[in-house]
Each structure stands twice: as C-alpha cells, then as structure tokens.
Length: 489
Image (cartoon, rainbow, N blue to C red; front, side):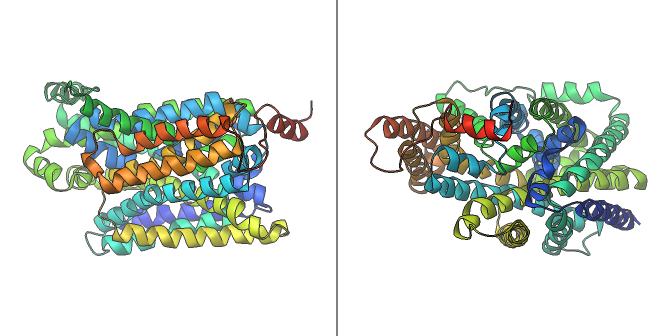
C-alpha cells in the first residue's frame, strides 16, 4: 500500500514539472527561469538547494553519532554560505545579467579561467548529486520492502528526475521546489509530533542529548589539529559552496536584485532552523528503541530515520514521511543536475560552437544534462562513500580552485587573469598533492592548504609583470559597464 501512495505522489510531481516545461522557450527560461521569480518561490528554491538527502539522512545520522560538532559543515557552514552569497555577491552578480558563474570568470578574466573554473565546478557536483541518487535508491529499497534493490532504485530515481528536469529546466525546478517545500515542512513536522508523543515530549530528547554530550558545538579537545579539522569542514561548505551554479541560479532567477538578496537570506534561515527537525527525529529513535537503533547507529546510521518511521508510525505517517523526503531529494536532485549541465554547455561547449542559435543551444543544454546524469549515476552505483561523506567531499575542489578567483575578481581591482590562473593551478595542485601523498594524516586539512596557497598565488600572480592571460578587466570597470548596458538608469 505504501509504495502506491509514493507512486501517486511521483506521478503528480512529474505532471507539475511537465506542465511548467510548456513555458520554456529559450535558454534564459531554461537556465534562470526567465529571471521573473517572486520572493516566496526564490526562498523555496534556496531552501530546496540544500534540503536534500544529506539534510534528512546524512546530517541526522551524523548528529546521532557525533553530536553538533560533527555537523558543523552542514547546516552551519551551508547556511552561512547562502547568507554570505546573498549579502556580498547577489547584487553584483544579478546586475550582470549573465546565465552562469562561468560567464563572470570569462568577463572578469579570460576564456582559460572560464574553462578551468567551470570544470572544477562541474566536478564538485559529482559527489553532491550522487548523494541524492544514492538516497533515492535507499528510499525505493525501503518502501518496496527490498523488492527494488538500492541499485535499481538509483536508476529509477535518476530516470524520474531526469524526465521533468530535461524538459522544463529551472522553471520546472522552481515551481516544484515551491510545492515540495510545503510538503517537506508539513510532513516532517507531522512525523516529529508523532515521535515526540512516544518520547514524552521534546524536552526529554533534548535533555538526553545534552547529557550524552551531543549538544557541544565546538570540539572538546584542545589539540590544534582537532580544531583545524573542525574548521576545515565548516569552511569547505561555507566558502567552497559559494562558487556554485545552483546558488547562482537562485540569485539570478529572481525578479529583482532585492528579491535575490532576501530570498537567499530567508531561504538560508528556514533551512538552518528546519534541519534540526530530522536530527530530533533520528535522535528520538535511540530513546524509543535503544537496542535496535543503537545497533543500527554503529552499522548503517543512514537507515535510523527511515527505519523508525517504518516500524513505529502508522501507514498514513509513513506515506507522508516518504512523500516529504522524496520531495526534498527530488528538488535537490533536479537543481544539482541542472546547474553543472547548464554551466558546462554555456562555458565549455558554446566556446567551440559560438554561432549556434538559441534553439540549438537549448538542445545542447538538454544533452549535457542527460550526459551528466549518466556519469553521476555510474559514480553513485560504484562509490562506497556515505551520503554525508559524498556531500562533504564535493566542495573541496571549488574551495581550492574557484573561490579565490571569484572573491578577488569581485572585490580586488588589481586581480588579473595571470593571478587567477595561478590561483586555480596552485590551489588545486597543492590540494590534490596533499590528498594523494599525505591523505588523512595531514595535520592541516588539504583543502585549507589549497585555499591558502590559491590566495597567495592570486596576489603574487596579479602583482608580478603580466606574461600570460592578456589584459585584465577591472571589477569596477568592465563589469560595471556590462551591468549598465543591461540595466540602464
């Protein structure tokens, strides 16, 4: 019976996405929803950007094992990312009237920087999207009582998300995000109310977590290497997630720059607060049935939350829960499939075929989407990483290679193409070198070393005589002129 509720919900979701797809007539509609989304929809899409598999399964499982210290990266780092992006970058990027972040790198620097940063951004999405696909496989396996294997569930989930995202692009994603945010919030709050009834309220769960030391945010150790690891996870999500196309798409899909700003801040705030709901539900499971869930925490903690719902709630609650979770994951999957595909098409493929008309380029975007989905599915089927591990590792490459050129390009007038190329090459190079040669034995997280070296390389490369990269465009010069052409006073 449960699986038929879920099937019905999936069919309705696909139907909504396909109806929205009828309004897609150009690459602008496909990539940034025609830049006419109102505040509630922008807020919902920002929320949905992050509230996916890792927030429901990954973060809650990590909290049960490690407490708040273990989830510094998400939701703390990811929420700060969205707020920083909204306050410091939204207005600047919105006024440029561009489709992708790669366009900024090309305008501010040159074609080489555009291609290198785009490749780094696309690679970073592999782990994030694979986490969503892995979670879809887990859900289909659970609700079918094992009749659908996790591998087949991943394939089925990818096919469903691909159907409406390929046709509707950002327009379908935005409309479904709004609908699915309502389902997610109401559904998980309902489950939390049922679970709290079985634990004697919310207070006993919080008190138990406090006594177990789960509510300490900062590491209790005074050793500096522990603190560096903690800061590494936090900064990776907080800064490494800023140069991401899905964050940028939400900013530039808004009707105005002001809506882009407040949509980011409000969406991030709702996300931060609401992520504690699945944490509460998962931790409550260890009080409701300590023997079963205590063992599950040590063997496969990602199954704690769904197993609790399947074994300790009525059928209606199960249908609502899995509908809500599927909503969250489908929203996140579609957005994170679309973002790298649009970026690759716009900033890599288009450069080799500059004379394509808009209709042909729209077809290229859709083909890139299908190709990227196939690669991610292959990665998800063959990776041993957990959902949270996939997400946390995803943004190391952008922290080491893409953040510094974006930040310095926006805020330092003397940043040059030579400096940007040095930042990318030395930042990613040092990060990869430490990961390969030292690995987890490194006292300083490899991505933090990459970030530091990237910043130093940017400054030195920009101040030295310019031998490569051509004449730079200053942040206040070329970019301001470009914005003025698209937004006349």
